[in-house]
Image 1 (cartoon, rainbow, N blue to C red):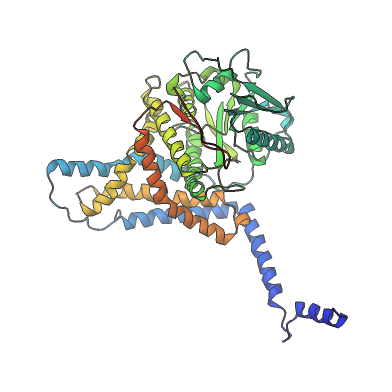
Image 2 (image 1 turned 180 degrees about the horizontal axis):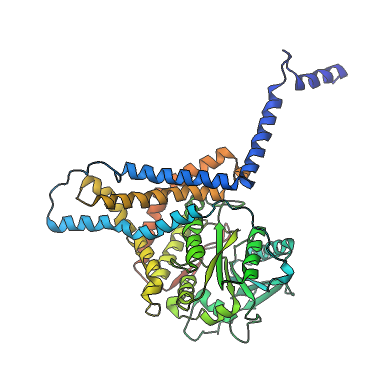
Length: 498
């Protein structure tokens, strides 16, 4: 290319033939400006985002109330049915009341506390913090995944400046791991039997607490992780602040599922509801009551060693399927205190819809065993029981919504208001879960909008899967522990049974 041609090309890159600056330059500048705005939106404007979220939340709830004629409007004309049929229809219309307590807690948790808090800052030096043990429990079926995540979590801890810590891998099968002052492997012998007959993950967790296995002091702290859990800098800072403060014996924080490579968009978008549940119900019960009124999760659990050893995981087969909730209810009964921990951890949603269904089925069956356990008083578990039965009766509750338009029956207007409120809260939780899971500076505004639409589209399919899980969970052997696939292309998982 001659010098003259090169000069011409250079000139046209700056100015068009009409003397007007090239629009492509402004387009590039526009893209950069949008990128900077997206980053600022994700990293700053915390109060502004929270106020906008609250306004959107309240608007959606009001629209549901108006749409359901919960606030005004004449009730539909009712046909005449046999008394028993009328009573049956009216009872099914009462079922949304079971979901009211958790809907209220989700509303209050998402409104009363900043949903977009600033990044947590250390309140003290890591050198002054108690010793931390990041405990990963695995069956040992995915050694490569365990090694990879141990290395990543180790790097994160060191990057934050954590000094007094180790990562402990508790496994049924030996894994090729480097063992040093930072990494310890505990292999649970096949011959080990807890006193009460605890099974599955509870058995492995209890083995770690045995006198001849435990190496932790009662004042040390344990951070319970699943084998796919990744800690973040913010989570480590939040945990350090929690243990340095030392006011509560147990804590838990937010887990998100839309990080890095997404294997299944359906299950990931469906799990956006769980993100909202963490930021709503879970956070409100811990920040206000400091009790696991509705239960808690089994990962991102922080416990003081002495308190965990006193509560124990040795609660028999009934406490082995949803061992996290059983443990939480026992700790609640014993008077221990809980709090919410700032900073999120990352996990993956199930890779297949079948695993998604089996996961929900196990949760349902495990919580059924917890709620029906005679060893946990009703005063401790009644809110968990109400939440469970709202889940169990979901097929009937959804059916009543459809049937009410075909077979109207007279019900108090307040009942319509409650049903609309519950529906509005649950609807918005899918939207908020997407907003919280997908950072706009990472995915862009267009993709963020598409993710919100996708989450709403998946709602009916998610309800269908949840209903199938309920129907399957109510029958058959409840003492099973299905483990979902943790790697793409992984072999079928076995099911541990009693």
